[in-house]
Length: 330
Image 1: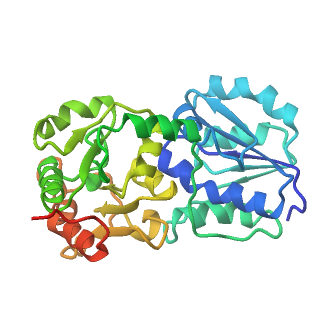
Image 2: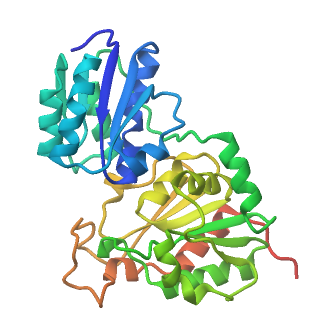
């Protein structure tokens, strides 16, 4: 095992939620070795998300994980003379990059579907660096100026609930029907004295057309904010509701909102929300979940029964039990 590391590179590209789930790797190193320099190699959007993280000393970005892009990075990586490279990407290209980097030692991620991704990533480092300790938590640091700017841009002064419909391309076992999101949004604003804010990419706006002019307290802000601004918006909300996708996990890491995750094909024990205050909702009727498959043989169109079995009233019951949102006065 490595004792007293002075400079470590962590590699994880691609999905935002996966990058966020690696955060306990570098936080555990910083807790035990505060003077150790932590560098992080990732793609551009996750790099933006972690740009304000106080536990990362340097972020190295690559536009796409292609051989020509990675080989351009080799001189810079060799110059750093890393004690250890922790490659958390199950990719031959990135394994090769780590091997050629000239680090004293490299270690590669071994995916274990039987444990949560946060613990799985941590163990890759914990097995190589002495005296690390695990905390089952996520934390995302946000620039204060961005939080203030977003606060001024939100079109309501009421407490609000964020819903991410994730209307774009996503696994079938993660998609919830737009009409169910629509029903849920209406139920919330009719019962509680709050607003509902819809979030997503610019490409999601057309899918959210049924929400336009639906209710004076339902706002479609899809495409309004970038990844860091969206995280700031989540930090100001009372609740974040959505499927097992990047925005949900970002919201779980920014502090304030209680997150309600909708889980179909994906395993809660593997990618469930981290933190005691959050809720992970799944179907109670099907014996085939979690299959963790990309496509479902039982699907009805583009929707799988494991997500269809989740109803808006299942989420409403959670809101009622938590008893946090202010009720409308009759």
